[in-house]
Amino acid sequence: MLSLLLSAMLAVHTMAVMEVHVPEQPVVALYGSDALLNCSVSLLGPFNLTDLSVFWQLTDTKRSVHSYSDGTDQLTEQAQRFANRTSLFPSALPLGNMSLLLRRVVVADEGSYTCFVRVRDYGSASLWLQVAAPYSKPVVTLEPESNLRPGDEVSLTCEAYGGYPQAEVVWQDGGGRNLTENITTSAVATEEGLFTMTSVLKVLLEPNSTYSCQLVNPLLGEEGNAFVTITGQNMAFPPVALWVTVGLSVCLLVLLIALAAVCRRKIKESCEEARREAEEARELEEEESKTAMQLLKS
Ligand SMILES: *[C@@H]1O[C@H](CO)[C@@H](O)[C@H](O)[C@H]1NC(C)=O
Ligand SMILES: *[C@@H]1O[C@H](CO)[C@@H](O)[C@H](O)[C@H]1NC(C)=O
Ligand SMILES: *[C@@H]1O[C@H](CO)[C@@H](O)[C@H](O)[C@H]1NC(C)=O
Ligand SMILES: *[C@@H]1O[C@H](CO)[C@@H](O)[C@H](O)[C@H]1NC(C)=O
Picture 1: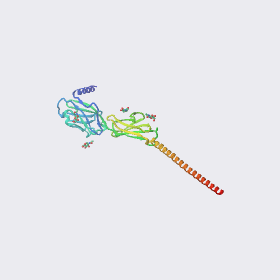
Picture 2: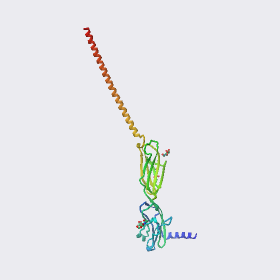
Picture 3: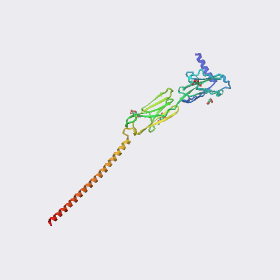
Picture 4: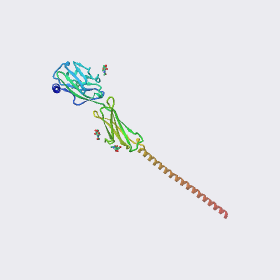
């Protein structure tokens, strides 16, 4: 009880004596890049560097991220995963700047860091480091891919990988309306902690419909976008082919009718010719018989 009271008094005391400044907003660092964890104190006057101690710790576990005392880095206690990745700015220390450079940030670095400074008095403050990684461009696939009929249920799968933190997946139709029904979104983390986002949209198939999938990273904002347009090509009896078939049939029909007309005329012509020939033959016969009769008379 007494120690609790003492430490509470100590905390009030240190806050009053030496103010340590860190960013209030989380520090966002891109995966694989370097992060600057800013920490500074308002000094009361010049001091000797050998009187300065700086301890950067993980707030939760109190594990050492980087230490400095007696005028030099003290890294024997440093947590293994920070080895060779941290440094202070020696020339900035006399100015009260205890910022830490953390190189090649990984997802596991995300969390709270405490900057603890002692010169004559001491103070500390904590900041939050957030890691962000952009997703790959999403890819949309259609399942099943072919032999589709209007009204069939199809699954559109949108996938993007290598991002952090988990993204929101937004599906829209061709008119830009947000689709919210029949969507299943899941996230799977790799060993490095980066996510693969998979979102499945189930729709009833309509020809010439467009769907788009977009990832929204809570730290990086809108990311890649992918479209899929379901055209006649995916359909078993596509409307385009239907019209081509109908068109061809009509052409064929017209052709047949024309052919029939031509044939009929030809047939009629040849019939008439035959009749004319027959008539001529009969006339000839009549004349011949007349001649014969005349011959008989004479
Ligand atoms: C850190 O660097 C030193 C010297 O360059 C090297 O011997 C050591 O293996 C490195 N440690 C890690 C964890 O990379
Ligand atoms: C501390 O020093 C670093 C490196 O020179 C610089 O980038 C940073 O802005 C400084 N921070 C403050 C609070 O002056
Ligand atoms: C669709 O949803 C996203 C994310 O929730 C939102 O930012 C956007 O304004 C919405 N758009 C429409 C047209 O509702
Ligand atoms: C969701 O799926 C059901 C069943 O497949 C369907 O009846 C409904 O129309 C779908 N909703 C939307 C918005 O597509």
